[in-house]
Image (cartoon, rainbow, N blue to C red; front, side, top):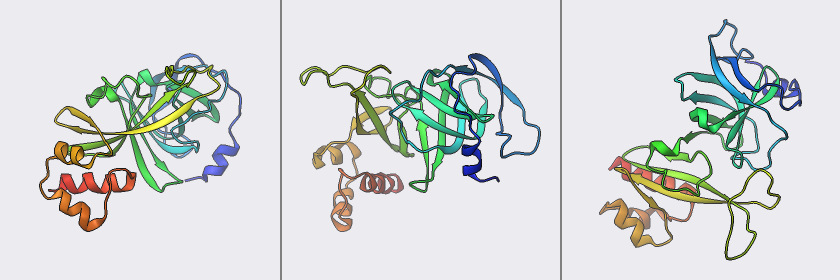
Length: 230
């Protein structure tokens, strides 16, 4: 496998080179020697590089499309405001709109872990209209844990407005949600409310013994993993 820096150094920073349906190799030819199959992907023009991403770094991973095909081992970044993936294809940066994507995952070089991003309509999260794009699935199982991004422009202190790609002052907040048997519950600072929703009699004792809290992401992951193992 060739070095990531070699690939990034070869990118032509020319935006908006393709629009409409294009034949894209399902396996990134930069990494795979064999002649890959191709799939039709709708690529949109980019007028500029975005500012607000799920991760500023380019991470290699897979994109699973709603047409049933997958793009394997492509470098990508997810633009929260525009709801599209910036993808390096044939040394050019192109964009795939989120409406054509079922889910995607990458390996975070910074955090040294795989990260999965899911279509919120598959997990009863569609009612959370303030969520930007694809929630991150932190823990899978009978109880799922999601990290969601809330993007808004605070024009007035009493009436924040949702943003578009022309807003210059944007804030991105993170919220966490459980999903259990189709029911969604926001992670709260109220310990009792969390325990009541999770319905595990031994959980409170486990929290005390391991000094786990509901207001820290790493602790939350450990808590839900414990719940799913019981």
